[in-house]
Image (cartoon, rainbow, N blue to C red; front, side, top):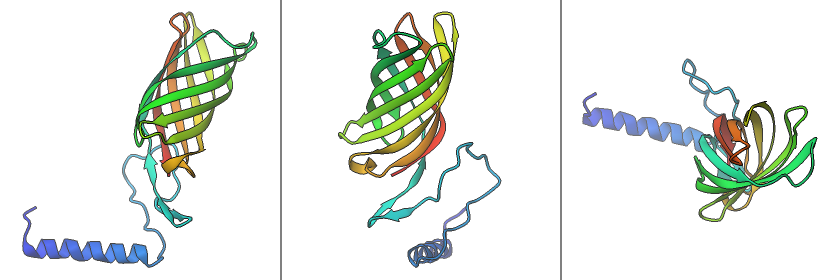
Length: 184
């Protein structure tokens, strides 16, 4: 497309019209259809809470953790993992998680996660899931629910689907955000 003064004026007029409608309290625009969609439904984009604007954003990233000996004996073991993540909207992030794992039934009974961004803002979440052991490794899937935090994440919400592997002999785990969203 060749930019002409008329095209530029039309684009500016469209922007002003959309911006005016957005600020007037009119209902939110209907999302576009026909392209790929995420399997985790996100709420409406652009909310105003307590005078502060929040936006819903897609989530992506991955983490690597290490863990020590379980803090409790089977069948439900309590384990602490620490490590690093590279996450959208947080960047390089430290992770701390405390989890209860039912080794007999192959479930993550409860997991409390804390992500600390480089600027010190904290994102908190809980997680439940299942795992399958195959020799010295396990694979797992889970659903993480964002429960708030500090700084820009004070009233954060969201949901992420995670998938990963655990190498019990090396005491390491890696996982990725398969899909999801975060609002803050």
